[in-house]
Image (cartoon, rainbow, N blue to C red; front, side, top):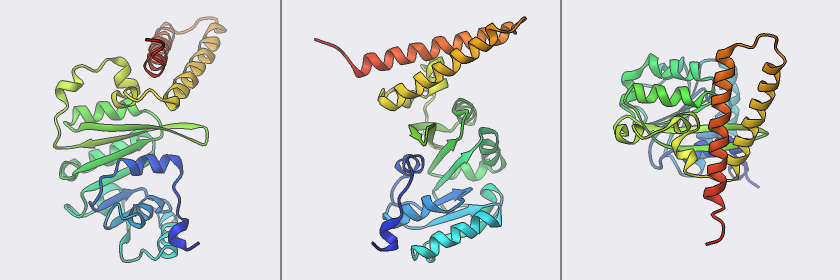
Length: 248
């Protein structure tokens, strides 16, 4: 098997790749081993890519990946902080993945003008997807698709956004579950979603048990936890109903 045939993406990176539009140059911010841009170029999904990181260590790993697959002319390595490593107009798609939401949003906020010149953003926070959805909405960036994926026992949400879309009318119809869990995620009530909701409900139950043992539980925590449990339970029931319609 040749090196070009050996590059396989984990479920998290594969979900990100699904939301990358074909035929457009890509920049992967915080690339680490450059697996994603290398796989996309090898597959012919994108013509060329930038693999960007702010540290020399990850870029050294990225350099090995690029060399192993003979991609030196199509995957270029860049050292830099966030989007500062990318020249305006150099790429159409930017991927920012594997970060906490605060770090991810700080990267976007630091160069919002360049963000608005892109065709698509593909974002994968390690947690806190609701904060990302709300930030996108506040900055007139339209959410156009999402994926929920399970990888090695953890769940991740991947979000795709565009600066030239208008989802205001649709956003006005989003309820609390849509903001918290994702409107596109909820439209795909598959086994992954049901596992995620069940897992989150178990977390809530453990948290509720902990609060129950407290001498003086914080009323605000109790209220927030009750709301979260109700939201998850409702989404799980709805996902089951949509997936299993029952007899006609």
